[in-house]
Length: 130
Image 1 (spheres, one colour):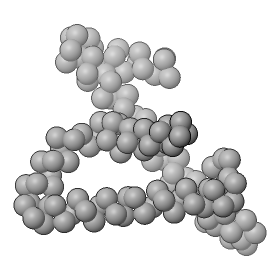
Image 2: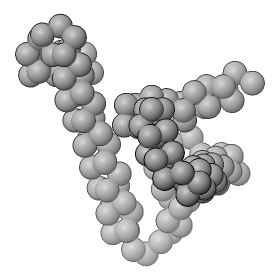
Image 3: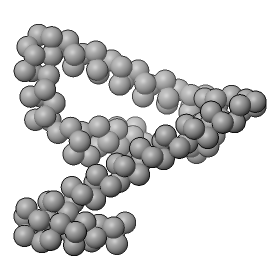
């Protein structure tokens, strides 16, 4: 049960808590379109839930313990085209790096807004901590 709760909190924190889409932003975006927005929420929830479920099933069935094993299963461990895995890794790593920079910028902006601290100094604090 503890592992299920941990996983649930990670997923919620990743989707909502990272600051990219707060509850208010989701509410404003979807509900501004009325019934179509509500249908959008349902469709988005089904797609997100399905992707999470299928990934977790792949991890469970193959007893995967790390990212490399997951990629090997997805792209067939013995695939002759290793360039696909390299391109996939570049895309994922680029996304992670961009996300990191966005969070650093947000941290710096928060410290600037709340405490009047220089944005670069505030961002540098998170870089050092990280």
